[in-house]
Length: 463
Image (tube, rainbow, N blue to C red; front, side, top):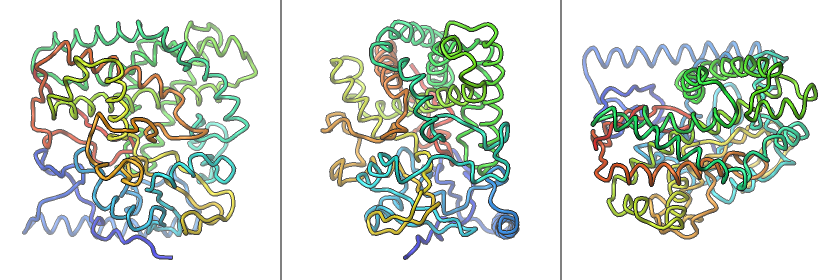
């Protein structure tokens, strides 16, 4: 079976100019002299390091907690040019929607870029597992592998944990939460106005609104917010390989273990306290911390990125901004759905591991192979979204059905909360600041270079 040749993407390149329109592809201008020598030295150094790590892994076995760089074959679904996935992803999807990546260490990874194939895999609870503990040498309690959460958990534990939180995310419960969200948005927009123009929308609004909402829902103290904001971004950064990301995951879970321990003796009024009162010793601190960790993760960075990038997309066309400012609730709902599809900020779904030998779209998948679903690739599939799938179109039909929140058993439990936040914050923002504009050219924004959750680090705006 052919594998993908990613040789055009192989050099480890670094963004050297924030005005480079292809900055988030980590491109580098052609240089001569000393800069060319340094580039060659870096390539040789990384090649040597890659061989060293490969020998160690073959000798001791793969341990994700020790992988300090992301193998080049795994980078393709994380690369973008502005808001668009790189063209190579579309070329791959057109050639074969399920294909094995060229990976080191004899590691079999199949990248899924087709919409129908992605839905099939995400909905199949019998053929795949989400448990990643076999990729760590030490997978016992308290280890790096013991990260828990719904995304890395299989039934029956997954079923039990999800039942504990699902009632908090019903439409009826979230409708009751809307006044609280509106108050949070108003307060954060006041702070943006007080900061003066220009200001960083990400700092004052995008990062703050979802963290305020999720911490209020869970019953977390204000003192914990800053640490969660910092770690919530670091855990998705793939530039340091899986070791750095898993380190942030472990640190965040330790914070939550401390929160759970405090609330076990004095339950708060939020979700953590309610679960402890209802379950008592039937749920361990570790399981509850992992469950809450997944809620914080799914409810914070993804929504924050959607607010920033969604605002940027709307500022490209005054007609689109007018929809959220003056349109009907139905118009806003449709626009939000299209933003979710178009952006697909969660670029890759939780990895699946084949439980048995199987075949998908002519691609043989062996037991224990990794299946990685490119959500951004699937949501741009013309076979589903139409011939102009790469264009943002708030009138697109059908508006729903995208995979921005995943699909099936592991679909994001907080999907409706994220929708409500976007439906509230975007209209409020454009009504409060009708002359809102980017304060820097779009190509000059500090795009995330290599992240499972795509976004920008800052969004300077004028108003």
